Image (cartoon, rainbow, N blue to C red; front, side, top):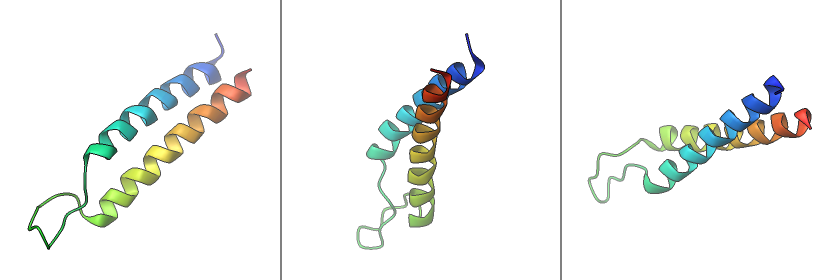
Length: 64
């Protein structure tokens, strides 16, 4: 098995697991006084999730 295929599958799985987790989370709100993630952390988590999914797809396509 090619190392790029394995890396692509791992990145894709991690990205999809992060995607499922980030959908459940919400940013902190002063209106509801809920102490959640700060908006910067929320955006950073979304960017990391999208990059992991894209990187996984790229590695899988490169290995084919």
